[in-house]
Image (cartoon, rainbow, N blue to C red; front, side):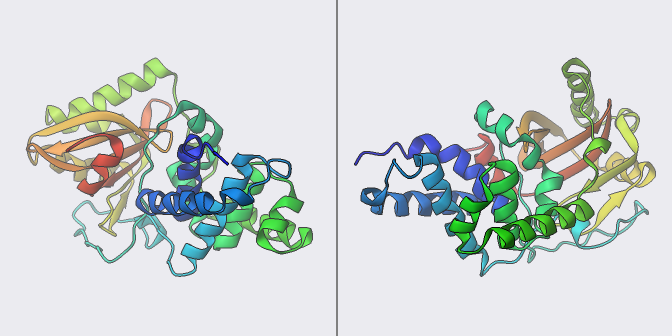
Length: 299
């Protein structure tokens, strides 16, 4: 039987990313999913389920098996309290398996997963058990019936409903309220992003300061130190923008505006922004040059 497996690759990648918090791990797990599907292609029965549903079943089981041996992937804010003093020493923590950003691609996939792939929400999902994550994604994102999820997990409908309720409760406690992060109209957002890039490229800390919300946060994996509040973030970043020659190229991650940043001609990181109105409410700068290829930059 000939199956169009590649046509589902992108959405399976997003699913595995939401399960693991790592685009690198997700790619490996999708490869494993495709391999298992190809080997079992003669077992696929289109009369029982669609190819898409069958592939999601395989991918979910692949993720659950992988997560048995892996720890959660946090952001710095998930490990410690914020620093309010801009002179606080940065603590590198390369041993932590940090959460990674997810590059936006196919618009249909982005729209379908928009609410479930925002960076803060994926980070909050790391507090759930692997089975809770699976139930939450299958029920609330993919809208599977409880009976179908129960069949996949080898459990009862009552157990699935219990897992879902606990997952929703834990997620609500761990994630920020969605209505505190609002996106401005496209023109207004574009202006804010253009000014953000200009502040770095022109070494203009005053301009950058004016763009930040009062309760702005700054996280910089693999450093476990993170900053909160306008004074701490604006003062710290004021030094950063003067630290060398910056170039910022626009991109998008987790359905949020982002930049690939270069310092003195070298790949520096992927910076993901959260906006509240026309102000920047959150900055997560992933200092990991290996991410560039996932976003279509670099060699």
